[in-house]
Image (cartoon, rainbow, N blue to C red; front, top):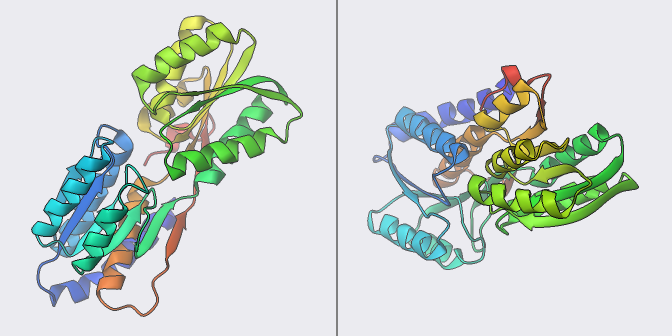
Length: 301
């Protein structure tokens, strides 16, 4: 993890010198939501990086409303941003805003989830790997047998990729059966009710994979309330989830992402593009890692 952080920080440090010779940069970032520790930590890292460059930052929260996100981007363009870091709530729906930003001469980098249109670079986690790693862990924890379910989420590309990876892992266990897939909308309260119903309708359920830690915390409450032995894995590495794993119990693993690294690298790619680098990657994948009882006490975003 230290290597990733140093790499991202070094990239920004190398680009800080040209910033001194430029007019003050204005960076805009629109988030799909900020009611989530994952994106809050990303915003914190963005503010820190921008401060090191002496840049101004404009941040908006779409609240999973693509119409609002488009409007937010239009407002940012009116404020003459130089760089748009885009965390889309709808990859297809935001395409018009990407075209508008590029027409205005703005460098556009998608972060965490990609967007349709002429995005300069996409920086995001290896989401298929994350789903695969979590469900491989779940299958092994169940000793290759039993009924499992997927707690799905909003159908954006990262979530779809996690489910794809999970299913690929489960197929490696012939005696594991996927018996249910329900949408918890990546929300604790929604997931709580969904998983309560799931447990009632599937009395032999032995394991659940949640596409994110927010939903997993609702699933955990439902499992604990049922008194059943149901193992739970997830994706994100959120502090609350890591604490639950460290404490022991049904929540046994989360495959951690690195949101701070994503936004730092995304900003570095945008700066490279803006300042004329001849070759800038179109996509920068960020590794993920398993967090379980063995390393949870030492892990943090």
